[in-house]
View 1 (tube, rainbow, N blue to C red):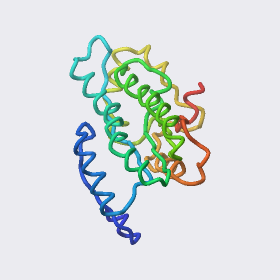
View 2 (cartoon, one colour):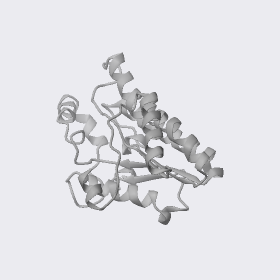
View 3 (cartoon, rainbow, N blue to C red):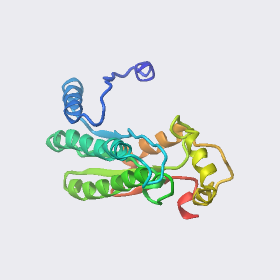
View 4 (spheres, helix red, strand yellow):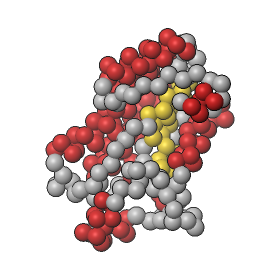
Length: 212
C-alpha cells in the first residue's frame, strides 16, 4: 500500500481467499464503487507442494486444483461481467507456470492445475475478443519466492534422482531464481497498450527452459 500511496495513487487492499467466490464478487463491487471501473485483472494466487500422483492425498489434489485453477475461474466470474458492462475493453492476466506448458514429475497435481489455466485463458480470450478484452497467461520458471525456495523439491530429487533431468536450468547463463519484479514487468507490459495485439498467448518467463 505504501508504494502505491507514495506515488500519489489510491488503493483498496483486501485479503480474500480465491476459493471464496462471493468474497471475490464483493471485493470487485467495492473496487468499482470506489474507482468507477475495472480495466486490468491479474490472477496470481497459487500454491505448490510435492508428491507423486498415486501417493498424494485426495485433499492435497483438491487444494491445489481449488486454489490454482478454480481460484482463477472464481476471479473470472467476478470480473468479467462488470468489464463487459463498462465497455472499455481491458486485460486479464493469469499467472500459470512453465509446468503449465511442460509437465514435470513429482508435482503432477500442480501441473494439471496450471495446464488447466492455459485452457481457461485460451477459451476466455476467444469469448471476450468481441468486447476488446485481452486474456493471456504468463509462465514463470524458478522464481525467488517462498514457494520457489521450497526445500521439499530437493527432497523429491534426493528420493528420485532421475527426476532432476526434467528440470533444465534454461538457456541463459544463470542458476539464480528470477526476482519477482521480472515477472511483474511482463504483467505491466501485457496490461499496457503496448500489448494491444496480444491475446490468447502463453508468455514464457523461463530463461529458455521450455525450448530445451
